[in-house]
Image 1 (cartoon, rainbow over the protein chains, first blue to last red):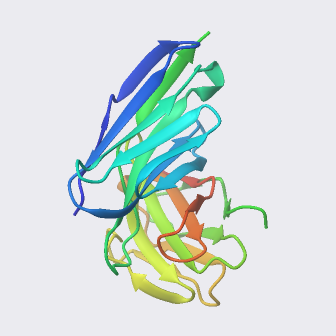
Image 2: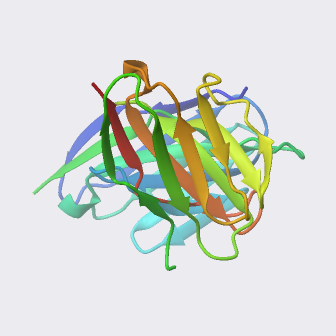
Length: 111
Length: 113
């Protein structure tokens, strides 16, 4: 089973700061997902990537397949970015398993 | 519909009661997943459907848990004789096919008292 580790577990920053959240996994994957979860439980998919880098607005996600590591960056952070960010990986091969999730990074952006 | 819809949003059950949680995936999505998320933890895989076929149920914690998707669209997760340790948020996700972007519902928060 893939082990997914995220760091930091908790992060408090000031509005405008550049944020980095890290994710590492133990076994080769087919794809990695970054998800955002707000209080109340709803989860929104931010990125799905299997190589390189993706950018959407102020969010950037990168992945290094060789090092089994991914980062999520938030530029010019804003209080509305406050949420739990979860890294999840999908298995390689033909397996039908669902995603394996990290425990999440609880981000608070203070005004 | 526009997104994955789950109902009810909140459910309080007395210990020993049976509950049924519903998931309406995005229309046309072949893959459907159920996850259980305990407080302060990341979600854990429960089961996976491809259309109406339940291809993996290895994550179901006990035989009190049962899931179905009889017509390949709406899915129901049933928990029999609920126990306090079943208290969690139950998340449903669907994707167009396996290993494509997953879309999540809001979840059902189950509290067993």
